[in-house]
Length: 102
Image (cartoon, rainbow, N blue to C red; front, side, top):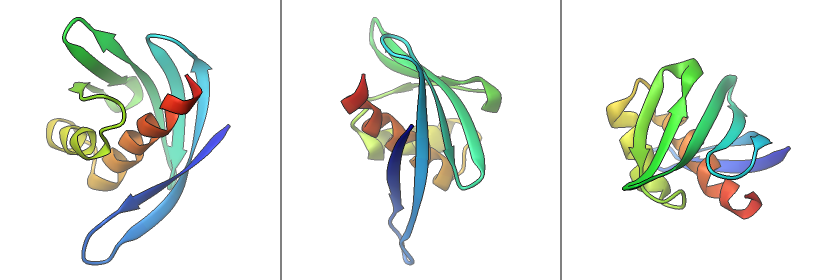
């Protein structure tokens, strides 16, 4: 298990901790992320024109920037899926953290 910290900046900054469990390394990778009572089963990888993420248990599938781009990925997840700001930040931060372990 890998612990990571999330931070959401705003009028009142928020911080929380998440946990990553790796099921499959490589491309695509498959992980579980839990934070603030939410569970995300994530499959992420590369395709011919960039990166993608699927979160089947949340009916999410979209393109991403590189995994390190927490800002862009958070915005993308929030704008094009049903994830709220906190959940999008959690997923994007988990992907950024994951780079050191794949």
